[in-house]
Image (cartoon, rainbow, N blue to C red; front, side, top):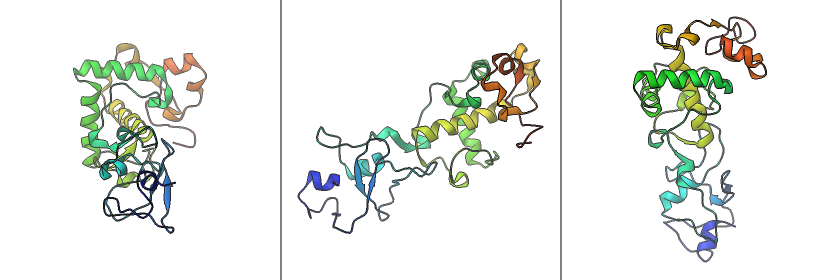
Length: 216
């Protein structure tokens, strides 16, 4: 049942709108709650990065709050990129290679900036079309802007994508010595061996473009 119907008697107008028997409803992927599908209010109901449904922005715009009797998504599950913050390197970063994640973390510390500072810089580059979006792991990549609402999962994918660009843009002399002296893996970021061979994951640089294989 639609949350509007749960809150009010059927047919009651709510913020200038009420459901009828022909109203299409969407189910939120985060909380499981329902909301009417609307294209007339300028509030996103789908994450542009994955096309999944999230209700937080809609109910927030309607001034409806969570209660014990009905589910409403947390507003921070689905926010514009510009309003989000990051405090840790995502698990997905660098194809889940923890050695590369550690190197990136050390590189960020060496710059004297926080992770948030670095990501803000690269979001600016993204907005200015200074980054090739070909490998961005989000749907509708060319439409993504700082004002785009994305879910938590897609935000982490975006952060991971930007950290890749941060690393490949960094001169080797700014890398930790043991990282700067490594040879690039032929298969770069697409290497499958890095996922099951710790020695290979550590000894070869995988934050680079493939020179062999299907991704070369």
